[in-house]
Amino acid sequence: MLILGIILFGMLVGAAAQLLLGRGGNGINWPMALGAGLVGSFVGGLLVSLLSGDGLALRPSGVIGSVAGAVIVTLGWQWWQAQSRGRGA
Image (cartoon, rainbow, N blue to C red):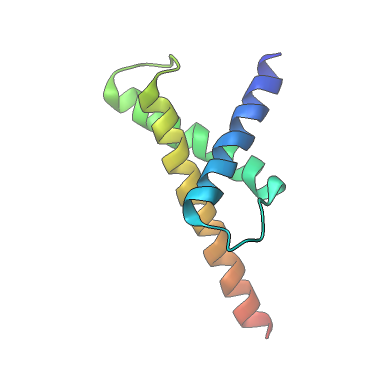
């Protein structure tokens, strides 16, 4: 059950990151949402939770850090995709 919860939370955080950045009417890219959500939650959520002194408990600081981390990962992914398309053309 914990694994399913982590996957669902990662997808929701990744989707929130895409909605915050604006997808231009393309909808949500769910594989990217899952990847960005999981990586962003791990890095951003863990870092912000530990820096704020909340430890590993689920607190608002960790959720905000998770979304911020997912936004950074999504921006990085979009930048990398743009660079790849530029080289291939």
